[in-house]
Image (cartoon, rainbow, N blue to C red; front, side):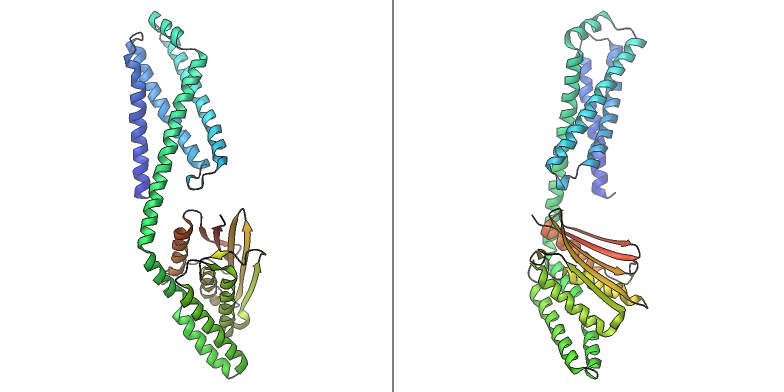
Length: 350
């Protein structure tokens, strides 16, 4: 839990205590009620209200994604509201019943409750109370998220130039370029035509990296060409140790994506995965549209290890650019599944 979360949590409990105490303190202005019942009602109502709405809050946090709020969340909130109102009503009815059993009500209390309260009015009061709490809580959450997104956007905008420079540094890997040139020089002794082809691919990679670094999006098909060139150059050194498969779903080729984002994933898969395996392995690239979002999945044989000497610049750039371009809707994940490292990028299509 970071500082902002701790701060928000402390404020929640502070407002819970102060707010419910002020609401339930209104019982002290009713002259028809005895002092004993006023104290009993104040303390039990405050404690029960804090506990019930705290549990209600945990449930709301679990079922609602405030960054991706949809119409379905209204139904979930309505169900949660009805459940909380029901619990709230029966807890307070039980509390009043317990007081009546232990301490006898005064004639003034009996007359007051007969005049002002019934089962229907109690249900309505419970519903209004929980509804008010729900509206305030959700409104505060939306305001807090809006402020957080605003601050994130300001921070991301301030570091945009640095992120672009880091993108160029991280993606046009000088070691890869030098190794490729050395590998091509060795290949010239064996196959002049193929070495000429590899030089063309290397120049295309460099031209692509330099020309696309300043744009926000390119067609996925262009990025795939870049990846194919990278694989071809890498296979000069790794030969059959590096296997490559791709499955590009129809309709995804023209989707606009951040430039060099797939190439970074493939480069990480080759450099930190396949190259460390004596017997080599396979890199799989898949693109698919699921639930109105583009999913780019790059998997490779191996295990998920964090290189202590690595700056993690590539992965950091991916996350920064997704946040900058798509806010909270773009996602990146890196996991180990069945002895494979799986990197997944999700890009919204609307």
